[in-house]
Length: 50
Image 1 (cartoon, rainbow, N blue to C red):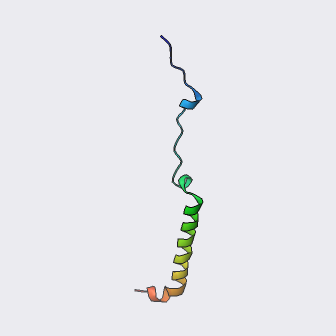
Image 2 (image 1 turned 180 degrees about the vertical axis):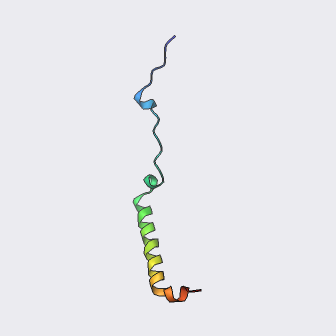
Image 3 (image 1 turned 45 degrees about the horizontal axis):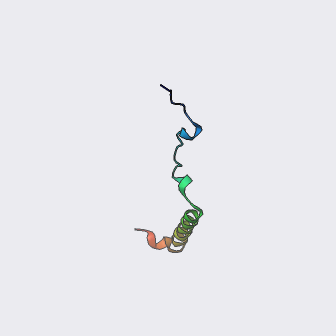
């Protein structure tokens, strides 16, 4: 009977987190959304009062 030996490839690797999965396109899209939101807030802030 042989004992099973652990190989380096058998080591558990944790999946990347949320920000680790984002690509450059995701960051560009997010920056565009932020820029559009800031533009709208700057331009139409007076009309956003309830």
